[in-house]
Image 1 (tube, one colour):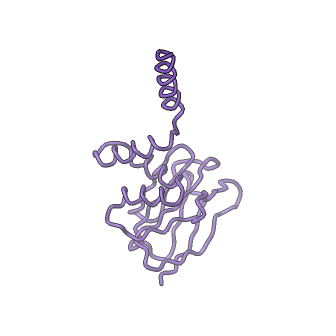
Image 2 (tube, rainbow, N blue to C red; image 1 turned 90 degrees about the horizontal axis):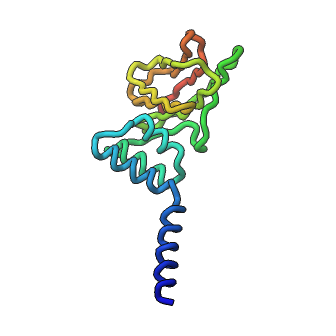
Image 3 (spheres, one colour; image 1 turned 180 degrees about the horizontal axis):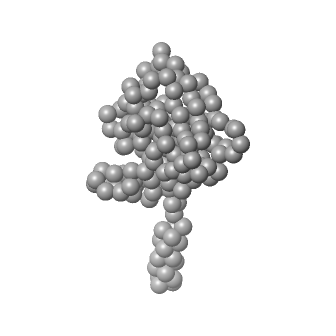
Length: 162
């Protein structure tokens, strides 16, 4: 009977270890690779924006340790979908208050890459069909535009600073 209990215990430990949630190792791996100076920051920022609520905040705090005010568009956690066909241009008016960094979360499955931004200090971080554009607010004048490799305008955001 004692041997059966030992085998059952080993089986339960193996089963719970093998079937654990994969989100936790991803977050742990992110913190270790970023903190250690290695890893791929493009992938890490895309992972951050795919997380929810508190996990997203903690992840962004790791990437931006000086606690800047970050505005993420769209704020609902989805992606801005660029059309890439016809005369469809993603247009919007963005009001910036006391923000330090603007992050645009964009889906690029229907556009011709690479994309270019009119703001020279913008960082375009691509991971598969997900693009994150990180822009220091101090460098934004009146517009943010994104163009595809053929020079076609895909995104045109007017900026209002308060």
